[in-house]
Image (cartoon, rainbow, N blue to C red; front, side):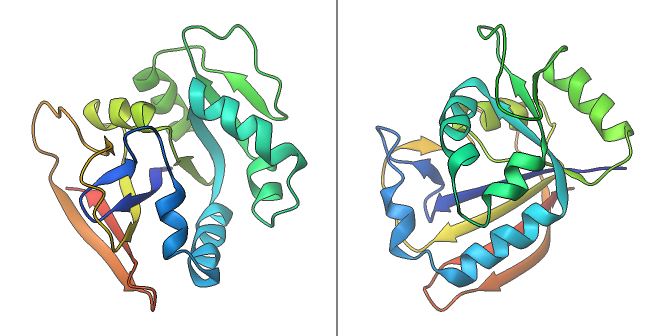
Length: 181
């Protein structure tokens, strides 16, 4: 069965963005080795789940990007979860027709590669609270933001996880993968 895999970059203290959505802190320890890791992970995916905010940001960027990540994301099936959008215009994108639990259960039953989730933060938080993420693939950067958008706010109960792998990088960042226990 396909897995839903969250890929995110987080600060050491668990924030995915600064208090105003800032992401500039990621670039302090981002390098080609981390980019290779992300590209490799995307090659194992064929479906991409997005919330409305992240859809707008990514649909404005990737279709015209020349970055090596662009064809991987542009070619994926993209499922956009939104209560306010009535259409999406990015290639291979469609609006979800059911609630997240139902839609994701149907996607997991289909043949194909794994299902990617990369944000936005509030969308990911809702999927975590609903128990819909099977694997957490996190790049942890060696800095503490102190405040911002946390990855796991307001969980109804702790999420138990099992460590799959960990890889350290020369920049001080590390990649950690957890599967829900």
